[in-house]
Length: 186
Ligand SMILES: [Ca+2]
Ligand SMILES: [Ca+2]
Image: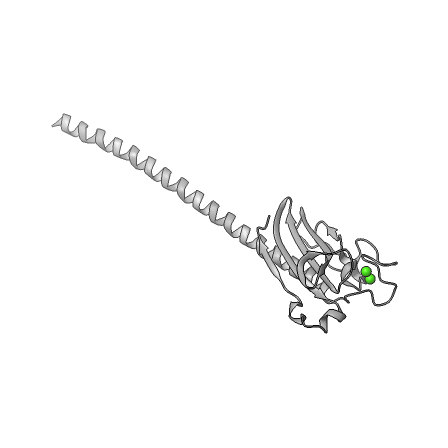
């Protein structure tokens, strides 16, 4: 009788130990799942913020004139348009080579919580007959690329085409503001 009782007690102890192991494994699994879920949510949040920062800059650039409206036009900033201060930029190519970290509003105020992030702009002349082809002289079409990076990682990238007046009157009017995007681009 006592042997049976001891045997039962021994089995109960083993069962308890197995239960503890199973519960531990389940807890580790649950913690990992929560961790992965938070990482996914944080990534989705960063992607959204990145795209918003790209769209904000793109919208600002697209509101500007195709060419310098006051001074003799230059590719890049004209006299008095200072690097790092875009409040007085008035044409699309004034933004060429823009490179800021962290991203800032047009008045120069840093956008909070984006330490380590970078916003860059590249402007190029492209061929109206072949918008993927970069050309050295102005044929009436500019390509704007806005890139948002978190460290070395590209979070978002936007491309748009801006037509000059001469081309806008031609048959390729529909090319205006073509936008390509996405997070996680190389
Ligand atoms: Ca200008
Ligand atoms: Ca300019």
